Length: 351
Image 1: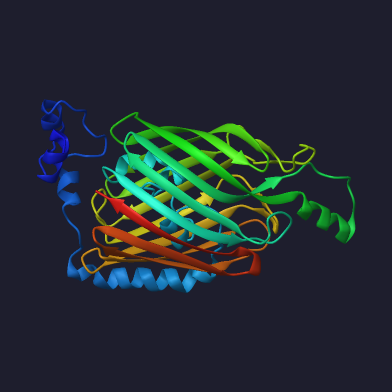
Image 2: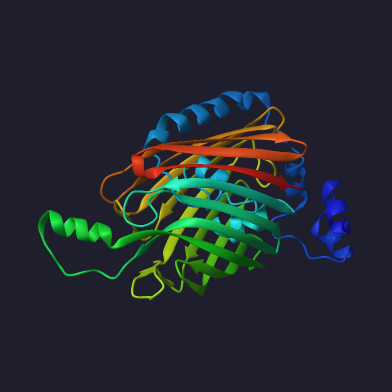
């Protein structure tokens, strides 16, 4: 254990002491922060608020929509995670959030997503192996994506709507990502994530970028993915291609004891630009709640998500975590529309 880690667990890792230990002060850690990190539960008078948050989240979750994205916790919260991202899955959701999370995190996940529309309609497996040790995060993940194919001849009526739908193709990509973090101020961290992506019959290099603002119990994040709008050949000849459009998403979060362990976390995310899916364009607004019980051995979460463009196309999501042998066994399930069902399981170890 390093001098800073020892001091931190003693609750004495002030910027001055950290500097004396030969390190650099963490942008989100100070004596107040470290004292908060030692609090694992809220006072009993917050029990009713925790229960209300869970009931509210599950009651509204019928508006949520599943997505073929990695992250068991994130999917369990309906996809509201850009302002929360604090474990290894942050490499996908918002790498800058790693600065506000654990000193180290290891995540192993897998699951399945079954979309409607052309492409791999039998099921798109998704999985992740991630290791975070700020200021660096590493991840390999496999996920189903929706790529836009070149538009065909213009037609009208019902046939025209069918042609538009067929211009979106579902396929699977495998990505190796390296996230690099940089503090700009005491409260702001930015990150860049070069990615090596395999999809269809081709390989390409892409990059994501993100930022996180963290002030006491509030966080605000933004993530931009697929900045190079990569294209992938769907067959050996290369005649058919699908392009991944740039996605921009913002999110905010509140934790009852942030930057320490919080018993209640509430988050809201929103897409800045529309995204193409087999069921039509989407621009989502998502909200989620995560709560912890039994001395942080049990976590329960749920969320809501719906498109602000066209029909809501919602489904139900829920998730849970259980600690054993110092690790968390986690899972989520999303059901509703036939083309938006998914599930996932994972193991997470953080310290």
